[in-house]
Amino acid sequence: MSDSLRDQLLKAGFAAPPKPEQPKPQQRPQRPPSQAPRRPAQSRPAQSRPGQGRPAPHAAARDRADIDLAKAYALRDKTEREAREREQREAEQRAREKKERKQKLANALNGKGVNDAGADIPRHFPHTNKIRRIYVTAEQLPRLNGGELAIVQFAGRYLLVTKETALAVQAIDAQSLVLLCDPHAVDEDGVPADLVW
Image (tube, rainbow, N blue to C red; front, side, top):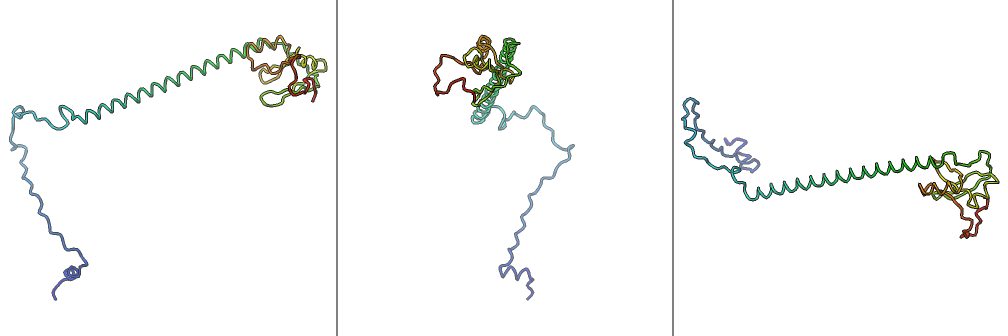
């Protein structure tokens, strides 16, 4: 029994048989650069290599698709840029118009408010889906309910003004006119406008 352990394991099927060694490819001996044969540069005919000269048809289609995609991206970027610039111009225009309206309202309401610091009667009115109030005197309440006085909003405050001033404010900015009672209007809900609550 001179079999080695390896041979015994191979017979029993526990180890893979060794792979035969593959012969290495023979390499050509390299010549030193001084001994390399020289050929004239123009003696070799021009050969066309793949990728040089005319492109393959599928490569041309791919290049055309890339160009079309690049054009589409450029067009989309240009459209988005123009839309942003247009929105910015419109926003600036709206801000300018709002500033002009505010200046006109300030000029129209300058010194025209008839609010009384000693007023103690609250007059409630609806505005922006809420019930608001302004304090008036006993003399101002029937005039407000009769349409001689009106309420306008300016700079976050409610001002009591005459009907003429209120109509001028309405011409500038209709949203600033909060309350102008019509004495000839029929009460829809049956509640009188001069009711103090």
